[in-house]
Length: 310
Ligand code: 13P
Ligand code: SF4
Image 1 (cartoon, helix red, strand yellow):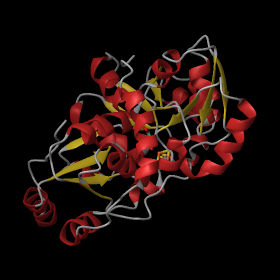
Image 2: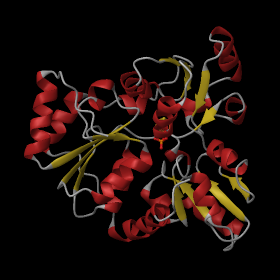
Image 3: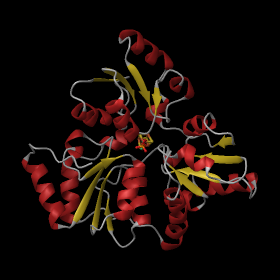
């Protein structure tokens, strides 16, 4: 959805002017700072942003998110210029698996067990995989595969969540998102006691004992849909703090409480309006992927995009 705010600062207006001048589309992940989401053309989850990157006719994709997301855009749209405003915006979970380690694991697994890789991964790791998934389509992706076993990487929590919702045998790499994984069940229990009747909504990157306490488990975009349709007036949100901006904006009559102040991804917050402005002025940092890797990684993203959503 387009989020361009009615009242914007001079810097925000200058960014919008440059976006137009450069024939760019400004994509922002749901965890970006409020002032960035406010002026994005599209804000969304990893799946929605990948799909937008694949179909946009803009010449420049300004990706306000983390490195693997901009890389996915470069894989899907090699003819476009993909800009990542801050080069230190990485993803520690994506860094928990390397192509070498995945190749070793594949040799151990043999040829019959498909490797399903969360989009939170490098292009090289995607290139070593059979298919990608996001938190919005992981169950559907796993169910779409032949055979009765899959191996998921890098997020063990997403894999454990999928294992509960498929008949297939799911094995996994032991990676995790530090922001979601540090959340303790006791924190959720205490929040539920403090806010009786509130619905707990959790991202599948949380550990299974957290998901056991949730009323609803979904991707970041799934949270907007749930908040809108659910009759409850109060929600406890177990994902990164950036999600609150739009939840509150779109549902002014409902209350959204972050489960813990520690739900902050430093990588998602590193990008500022100043970085975005500089990126558009200097046309930096251009994200590219070597062609041989891009073609193999693209196949895994294309296979994912062809799977109907849950
Ligand atoms: P989604 O936006 O796909 O739910 O993913 C969350 C996330 O952690 C992205 O880094
Ligand atoms: Fe990576 Fe977690 Fe940050 Fe998402 S929230 S970018 S998975 S570290």
